[in-house]
Length: 138
Image (cartoon, rainbow, N blue to C red):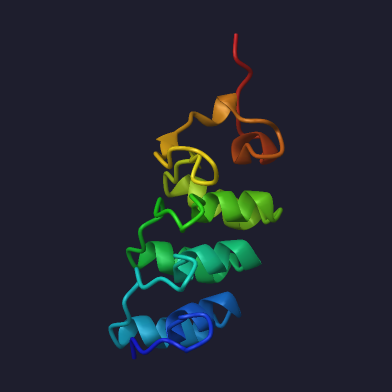
């Protein structure tokens, strides 16, 4: 079950989540699939569900205990993928689960991730502003 493909290093769970196959995701999780298995880019099933915009799949993975603030090899979280790809409903699920927007200077920087309050991010990168959920700062 944890066997990875030879091209992208993806498990069956990652492949199912990446394709939005929530039925298959549920079956694999019930059978004990590793929620934190990552592919060659360090992306988990939750990150792929967020990146591709599958809110039902993302919600199930969150409810099943997937780590919501894991970083891929480039310093991105599931919330950042959902936000950057314009998937508002998936971003809302992650925000409701207390996902944190994390800034990392992994490319050309020291690589130390820093949690950044979403109030200080640009509108494009700020999922709370994107969703209209941030109150004005006085």
